[in-house]
Structures are given as C-alpha cells and as structure tokens.
Image (cartoon, rainbow, N blue to C red; front, side, top):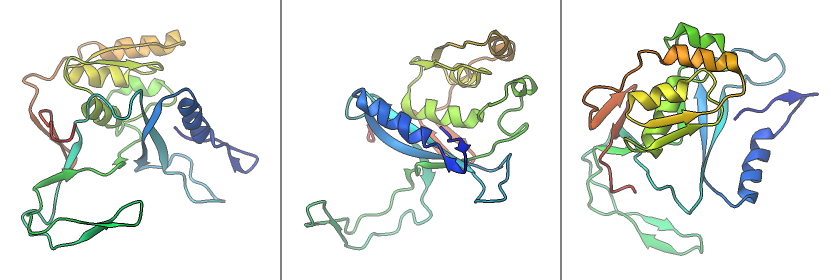
Length: 218
C-alpha cells in the first residue's frame, strides 16, 4: 500500500485504510515493509520512495496459519549468556541462559525484493499491466499465511500474479477484476502454469527458507 503525494504532502492513504479496517473490527496483526530494489520515479526534493506498507489483518487475535519464512542464524550453535527482559509493567524476567542458538530463526518483517522489468517476473505479458508487484512478494505471503489446498482470494487480480503463485504452490485461488483487459492478460499469463511437482518440505530461495511442516510457531 503506497501513498500518493499531492501538493507536497503524502496522502496518508495507507494509514487511513489500516485504521478503517480496524474500525470494522478486524485486528491489525502486523505492519510490514516491502522494500524495493529499484525506484522508478527518483525524487529531486525528498528521499527516494523505495518502500510500501504491507498490512496483515486477522479476524481474531492471530491468523489460523503461520508458517514463517526462516533465515540462517550466523551465530548458530553459540551458547547464549544470561540476560533479562523488561516487561511492559517495568518488571524484569529471566531470559535465556546456557541455551544454544538455533540454526534457523524467523525472518524480519521488512522484505527486500527485486522489482522492475523482468525482475518482478519473467512473464513479458504481465508488463502490459501498469502496476504489477513481484511474484516473490505474493509467493512469500502465500507461503506464510496459507497451507497447500487452502483458498487464496485476490480482490484485484490484475495481471494474475497471486493466481500464478497460488497454482505453483498448490493453493486454490479465485479473483475479481473490473477490467476485461486485465482479465485477458491474467488468463493468457496463466496458460500452462502448473503446480510444482513434488512440492518440497524445505524450500529455499534468495536467502530465505520455508518449512511447510512448522507447527511450533503457530
């Protein structure tokens, strides 16, 4: 979710939408950042806008599924020293002591993903749409918040990015779109897209790791 700039001021549309959804009774579970590697419209009067917000909403206190992207800990195996953590009421509680650091840890909520011509996707036809987002962006969210055979809905299906990544990763999908032109682009793009054969339990890509049998984080 990105903001426009009108008369020198950002519109704050992203925050307005987040607050509106909260007013409807849904829970703002996480505020995430999509960091772009490329800036299509460099600025002369302010820092280049290189990120957009990603808001994760849930109907309850937490999502039904959370299979987090994992990263390799550079200090894996090292023994943690004793430390304490401060609680919201100011009290201190014991932390970890004598426990080895795990091989894998949960990824941060700032995702740096390549964007731009033939970086967002290799599908030439997708660039007939004026505002596509990277396949990897949809892929990461689909892997995080859903399981195989779950249903993924995209209310603005556009060039079909969400649908494509849903198919590849064994999810069911449906979408809606006002523009027949965009529907035609998506339908053409999805021809021949198939579910990945023998979907792997361990999936590694661009430095992140996904394990589809993670239960301890749920």
